[in-house]
Image (tube, rainbow, N blue to C red; front, side, top):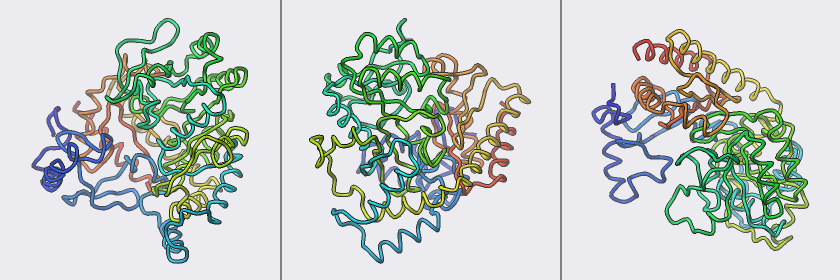
Length: 445
């Protein structure tokens, strides 16, 4: 088994090691972004299909990383790929001009997503969250942004705070000291952020009492799927109360549905939770891996965007023909609900299987899920927020377990909290094999 300091032994994946040594000479640490690197070097992937990926050394893995979540139908879904191929053949790739497909996609979103009276297309989740804040500030004339500790909303300066960093518990009002997760963040961004504890209704009530007339937007994952959260649902009444406070004080409620949208339901988590935001950010599962993201929202707020309003909105690749075709083909397969019902069943199967192992092997751990996203916290106590995870979860157990999984043909991203993203291409046998491996590992650990 790999040493605790590494995820993979160097002698198992020499081709990945060689590629990484080439890469680090020409790119920062040999990976295109922090999300793709882990020690001693990452697996370099050669191919993906369905529920499987193959690395540069030819090893096959059941894939639960799922490209960070987008491939809800599985890698290389043939129906989506055919729609893209036909679109390229008939229309080309890029116009940077209006086309019928983007109109159809807007109409499709309006038909399924509760808040989507209007939609604007960009290319990635961060793009959409950046535009959401600009739109909210334009609509309110205010600057303060509220987020919740442990939630990741992309790399944009205004939201890159308190994702995994921790320097002590929330204060007696439920607030964290803002901690920037990057160098180069301007002081203005720190001054304009308020960081609260998820599922702490009293904290958001107090903040609105104190600064409600200065809050432009509250940004919240309707279900927390951040790097430490894994899969933490909202307590009863939490989202509803935020909705009431935003309405009362004239702030914009923004749901970050980059992970929840189209993965858990065709209408997003907002439909499942019964709370409609003013704006919502969608990406990832909307197009099964092709690059597109959508800012959806109420007409009164969305009309702040140019050319209708003065909140500048543009981009060469926004709503490009290829990605729109992929999104339409993906949504067409999801709209009858059969795939989502299957994903929820598979998520419960993996969760329950892990928990049986933990119980049988007397492991201080608990698996939780929301739909097809399953997370493991090495703690038996119920975890409702970022503070709970920091205090009660043992991340070293995640490191040891993921090393074993790699050596036995299971791939997920090594994180402090392990998360398993299931696709429609996964079979019950894949889930059962994963549970069997967990049992084999925890029998000895």
